[in-house]
Length: 110
Image 1: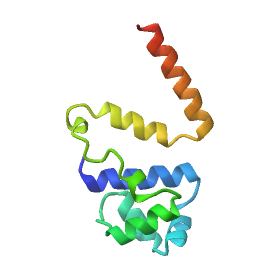
Image 2 (image 1 turned 60 degrees about the vertical axis):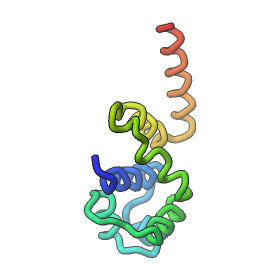
Image 3 (image 1 turned 180 degrees about the vertical axis):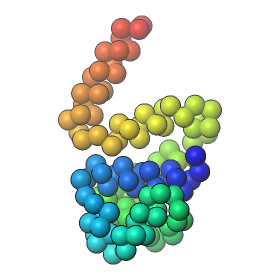
């Protein structure tokens, strides 16, 4: 998966986690909604300035948004990053439940 697709998936996941539409995100960020769609599909390479606007609109920071992108383990084993991204898409209550389930499963296999 290339960097544009990863960024697009993260934008979409964070937007969906907030429960807002592309139009609402575009309004918050001062961008056009079609541009948001293009970013989410990995069709556009957003500038740092645009990413800062998006991160602010998505209630996150550039640092947190780009966390773990480019991690070398992604190339050899994409499962940890995919799991992390899926986990981050969930609301806090569901994250807590998933964490407890994971801990229980790990203890069972020890």
